[in-house]
Image (cartoon, rainbow, N blue to C red; front, side, top):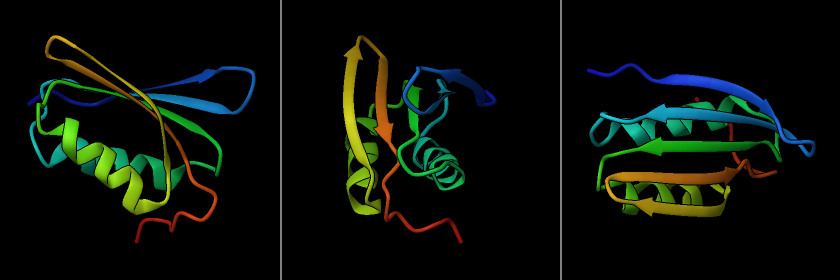
Length: 94
C-alpha cells in the first residue's frame, strides 16, 4: 500500500496543504481527506491527488456533506486532483 504524503504550502491567502493519495483505493482517499480537513483551520485549502476512480464521486460528495467547498477539480488520465476549502462551520473529526 502506498503511504500518503503531506506537504504544507503558503499561497498568500491561507495555509494550504497537499495530500498525495495516489494508489489508495476506496474508501481511503475520502477518509484521509476528511481527517486532514478536520485538522485544518476554516478557510484553509487542501489539494488532494488520487488515482481511485471512485474518488470522482466520493470526494465531492464528502466535501458537500461536511460543509466544505470544492474550489476546483481536474481529471487528467488516471490522476484526479481536488482543491478543497475548509468550511467555516464544518464539524471537527470525532
